[in-house]
Image (cartoon, rainbow, N blue to C red):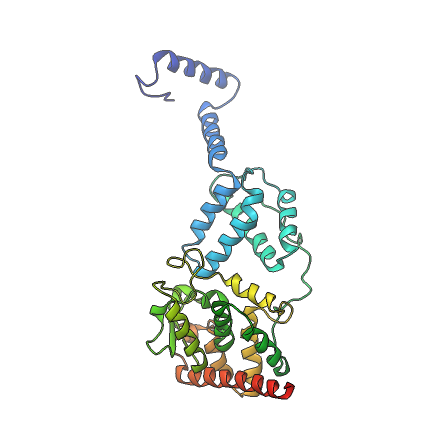
Length: 349
């Protein structure tokens, strides 16, 4: 065994370490293995707290995640898990430590609670692989959350519900939130993608938005047509955007950050639509009502929804798939929404 380098370690210190090692041998302890264990314990103490391991796990997974998946995981860590579990040692973290944290999240955000449960399991697995927790010492988090009774996100799937929905949306005072919600309603884009829009990604006439792959859940580039009704509203936003690159700039850092998707959700709740629809629900609205009322072919609807294709032949997803047909779809859909809401308004007045 080596006990150090002279003169950093004196002769007296080296002899003392030698004597300790000999005593360990007499007691049946392997001094090399003992020192290795002590180093591992020291590493666990310095880097093995939940917050550090969770951040390392996120950085590791972020290499293969989409922007939206990374953002969601970061939100769950920073808003819920790290504030409660951050200082706890990962080596001794138990199911009973995590269960109340998950139940507290479930009380107001069931979907996020399920994500948090999955993240906790993955963080524990990561800590085992990194030598910060004993092999096989997993958590038992299956079944800790109450079963969901809903099963689906709130969405309007009957045409009779559209007039009241659109009237409430058009009554939203914030121009940015209202336009962002209408962008989701007209194009069926995911809200996280919608709020990340940048002016450089639009055609000059605002007729198309070319969305880069890193913003899409599928990891593929996507082009979505923009209806004429929305172009004028986007142009209005552009005139007020200043030098911000974002269509929906963040309030605090408009030059570097865009509006949070939760701002759209809050606007819907404030408009009295909490149990009627969520921003993601507009995708189900388009798929259901456009298919029924406008007789749109399923393949065209799926292409607009940017769902990933399955199978070897369909694996290479063509970002311009059915683009001409989808221009027609998006414009007809926007016209239909306007017509049905205006007709209902005329009837009530």
